[in-house]
Length: 602
Image (cartoon, rainbow, N blue to C red; front, top):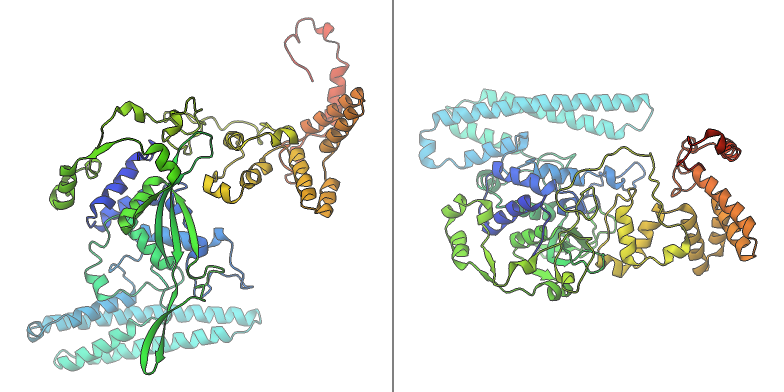
């Protein structure tokens, strides 16, 4: 099954796929350079993840004062995930006070008996480091206490309830007092009494590494850094991941509390006869792990009624993430999941016999050193086509299908290229033009009703005002009115109003239909009266009303928007436009000779 990728994305896609295939551990510097290739793909896997609605929020931090969930554009989920891919809160690399204390604690635990017998300098080093950590804790505690005093003063000035501020201030004072007492005790200790000094150091480090409110996942904003385990600090911090997809799997598991249960290749184009392969992932929400005591034993179980702070997202909830096909393949390889292919795609396109270069595949899999020396283009085994390669000539999505054979070709998907249905060598169009688009292709409700799905898709792609993403055939099968809902806000407001009135009447909601009729624009009223006059045989009256409707159209800056939805100062003045038209009608072109020849006056 051939998978086509836009030329602008092919290089980055091959780099990501090659590392997913070889599964060789990568250093942090190499991985960070690859991470940017994954997260910076517009409308790709990273952009389509449900960061704003599925990022766990057990403490309900992303709520407003009325306990309502904040708008998606203000949610921190996507920012946190992006910062993780840029290296924030890396395993074993945190310089937070708690992790520094924990690292010192692990180092003390790792001293064996031989080292202890000759560790005068090591004990002095540990004592010095512990003192420095306590000095740092005193500085942070002092700053925290000053902030609490400021918040208390603000609460007293505004005459609000200051109970919470007083509690925070007491905690800050206790934290500062504990740090100062510990530092005094540590300064009084000497390395002569090694056992006592080390016990004191361990007790202080344990206290410094405590977290009152641990983060629900790595990198969570508003929480301290995640406390690393010994394995994460000394082993996983070196070569933790083999590809960005492996890191993404971890972020999905921790931040979204979910797992990927399926990777699918499916038809993604609504254009007639166009076969374009897209990828999609199926996420499944995991339960919240709980523990309880039963008959003196600790029992673990999954709480299936806790949404983890995400309204309506309960365990076993499903979410389909649309992505590029290479992203679905890369994540499937990283997750060791099978790749599912839609039957329609397989039957139409998987018709070519190929052979795999087994020798190269074995070399890449078994010889690590050779794999490291290979370029990313040679890390994936070569597949040879046994038939004429000309049969695989691909076209760009949107090109008209001229034969049944062409409908079996997998086409290169449209990207954010400025010119529709062009190849890779494109020149961006000039941004100079009117404030609003003057392109208005649908002039009547009858014309709208005659549009097929293919016509609607092509029309959307031509509209400058369309900035969204086209739905896939899977989504359209679930909701046949999806294309209409996308197209209606972008066409002539009179056509849209007629459609809404008809839809309300079909649903039996005559109150809404009457309300819509009362709000029709003067232009739409003139068009309806013109149609009624023509039906009554009053052709001259119909022409007058149509001319009046054209005048109202000329007044509007954008006829696709409802009246009052933008500033009225963008429209033309009615009196001025009428006087201009009347002056032009009185104009005698014969007086100007050939000066006005070829000029079409209104």
